[in-house]
Image (cartoon, rainbow, N blue to C red; front, side, top):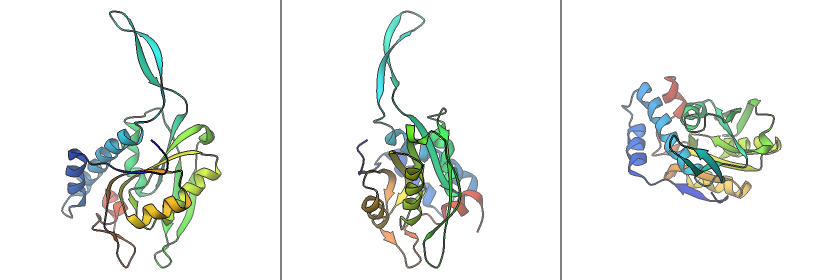
Length: 211
């Protein structure tokens, strides 16, 4: 995938699951399952341009040429806490990926991110990074997370989000034009409290049943 682009995945399964995800009556257990399945579909799109190479394999009947992913390996970095809800969806497709965690919360008065925890793979500079953030709203926290992985040496970064706003996308690409973004939906924008509308509410609260 070319960096500096935004892909809004327009697929019937994505639209169906996103509609259920947004529904205020969707219970916590189903919400978690939907996030997992939707992330899997977005990961398929986000990784479609990973480099592969020709190899020779032996089937039960004969020898043949096949393809395998080559080059850099993958690091998956969810932004705590809601990003953790997307982790299994990625790992179901890339079980050998290393996992890093970035803990950020948003100051509700300033809307600025506050970093409280970072644990990344030691070799992240040698890996393609998939950054997971369900809601790309103002872009403040996500941009801070991009800075964190770049300072650790990452040079290939893709962001997977469930929902984004034009403002959030603009913020990321103004500061990090090399980051590709894959989303299920680009929503209308932000309300006066900095929440995505129409959105789906607070992803963390809905994932973990908190208020």
